[in-house]
Amino acid sequence: MESTHISALQTKHAGLERQIHAEMTRPLPDEKLLAQLKRKKLKIKEELSRLH
Image (cartoon, rainbow, N blue to C red):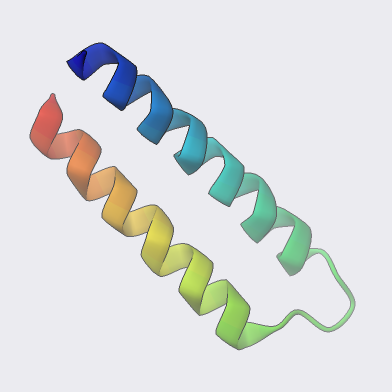
C-alpha cells in the first residue's frame, strides 16, 4: 500500500515538474502560477522524504 502511495506522489511530482518547465518556457510566465506549482511540488517532495 505504501509503495502505491509513493508511486502516486512521484507521478504527481513529475507532472508538476513538467508544468513548471512548460510555464517557465512561455514568453510571459505566470509568476503566481509558478509559485503555486513550486509550493505543491515542495510539499510532495517533503512527504516523499518522510516516507523514505
